[in-house]
Image (tube, rainbow over all chains, first blue to last red; front, side):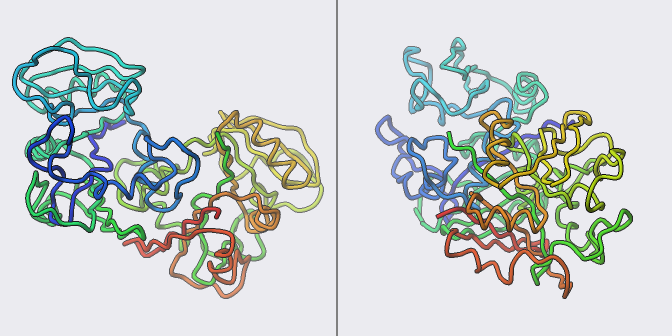
Length: 214
Length: 214
């Protein structure tokens, strides 16, 4: 059984921006308003952050409820994990997600600055340095036969795309433009040479882009 | 946690026909060619009947890989289980699916003609008579907190719709017309009074209809 490397529910603007510049503790997405990017996901019944009953169960909900299906590990970049840069000043920062992170699997955080692993609820964060292929090998072993999610951000996804290690990508394109910021692509067509692509407009206004390796 | 009753991957023609007339052992769908209905599903990586690697991983694959997600039991009609009608002549018939049925849960077969339960691999078939609400209560208990799939055929889905027990429906509409046969609806719009509806055309040619209760 193949263990896929999958990008899931990654959302960018119509001009390809996934995250703003000048990320801070107060503004994890920098100058970009994450509400404008993620409102499609927050409206669904299966959004991991949902606290009340209700929510839509149409197309967008297929995307959010697929988030954890057969996923055994996540790989994320340092900048998704933390607003800090450079060596860790201390180990107090434990991510943006509180005591119950939505991952429920081992998470491998890419960083040149090592720190000890720690566990919050059923999510364990490991801090790893290395080439994408080596990190993927570690994540696959931890995933115990299941697939591995590539959680972003942009630099991390680009790095694994450049190494040709990504099997599928789900990118939701939101009908907002930011002008500047961290850009996943100039156009989804950039990936057509290596991937099949289904372009699926949702009634919510986002357009789901579903890529799978040729 | 709500236990939903869900119709999944149910496929009809553009004129609403899910199954032909004159079902026989040789022709489980009667005069209808099931290949014309289900080719969209058979092309996906996650189709339960797939025996070789490969297959598409776009929109249609989200539908087929959702088939078993959080499902703890199935309810099906007698005519989905068997081409026989009336009292069981014997108990040799064990369904169309061979030694490894694709359900992997308890399955409740609606019939006025009782017979003993039996197990094939990890699927146990029970034969039950009763009102839809009573059968659903049995299936929910067997599902142990998970959702229940309503597997069809047409008469069974109509019966549970009439009793207002269905929470979500995924119906794929195939671009073929059969003229006659067992018809799910005159039009998907028939259900709009009680359900939200996302209509999602797939690049494969089918149009996914995703209903959820208002």
